[in-house]
Length: 235
Figure 1 (cartoon, rainbow, N blue to C red):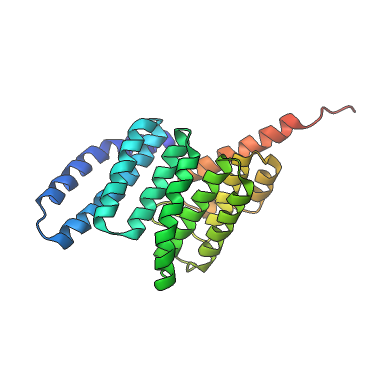
Figure 2 (cartoon, helix red, strand yellow):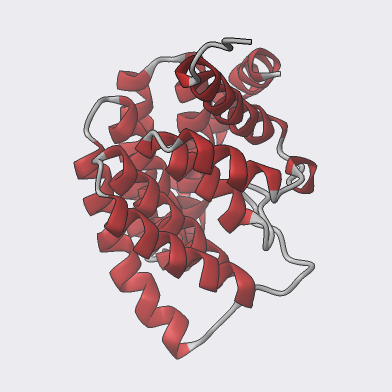
C-alpha cells in the first residue's frame, strides 16, 4: 500500500508543483498570492509525506522547509501548524526528535491563542494533531512525562471536535488520540501498554491506509517484543 501511494502520488506531484508555482509567481494581487502560497504549502506537505515514505529524508526536509516558508507567506496559522507537524516528523526521521519537539511547541503557541479566540473544528483538529505529535517527539526523546502531558492536550482537543469532522491530512476524527497513544507507547518501549492501547481501538475507524499500516506495524512490534521478553515455557 505504501509503495502504491508513493508511486501514484510521486508521478503527479512534479507537474502539480510546477503548475501551481507558475500561478503563484504570476499572481499580482496580495490576497490571491497568499491563497496560492497556502496551496503550495499544502502541496509540499504532501510531497514531504511521499518522500518520507520513499525513505528520502534529506529531500523530504527540503519539501518541509518549503511548506513552512509558503505557510508563513500565506499568513495562515493552520497551514503553519501542518507544516510544523510534517517538519517535526522529518526531524525525527533524521535523528533529531528534540528539534522536532521545538517545532511543534512553537506552532502550538500561536495556534493555541487562535483556538481561544475562535474555536473551529479545523483549528481544534490541527491543535490535537500537533499536541499528539509533540507527545510523540517527547517520547522519542525518552521524556515520558512530557509525552503524556502533550497527549492529554491532544486528546482533549480531539474530543471537542464535532463527531463528523475528519482531519484533511491524517483523516483522524475523535479516535486520533488513541491512535497516537499506540505510537507514543511504542516509542517509549512500553510494549505491553502499546498492546493495551491497541486493544481499545478499531484501527479501521481511520480510513487512511498508510496510517493504518504504520499503526499495525507498531502494534506488531509490541507483540513481538513482549513475546521475545517472555520466559520460556517450562511445562
